[in-house]
Image (tube, rainbow, N blue to C red):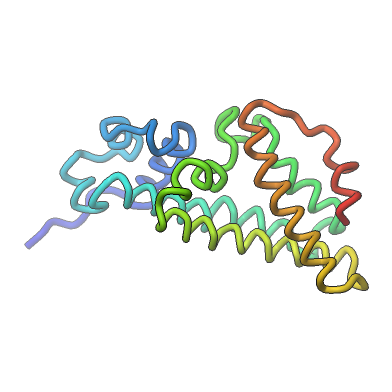
Length: 188
């Protein structure tokens, strides 16, 4: 009879996510991953199989926690007006004290660049999360401009999605985006 797990899987995945987010897949070695997750080698292999499976689960966790919370705030019609919610959403790309660490960008974006081009599982997960992002952005542009034709709203949502993802890459290099309200005004 096997013993029950002696660790919190959510906490372990949170530790793994933060390490992968900061260092990337290639820059994360197993000893550091074990330390970040608070696991022994045996517990790690029993629960997670390998580094790649943990990486994919960490990406899922990012989508289910950080991204889901951001998208809920973005689409909350009980919150501020649409333009303000969109601006607040884009300010998430900034290097601020609220970020987990300076210059780490967006975990989704990091995975899109580092592993998704070479790994079908990473690519599929990135696609699912970025599709949820697109849907939320479509919702906000439709709310802000309900009279615009669907094809115009779709193009705006696509432009915003790509701007958001690209801005995270630039934020990782330390770029600042003080002019978000003016830049976004054109797209709504």
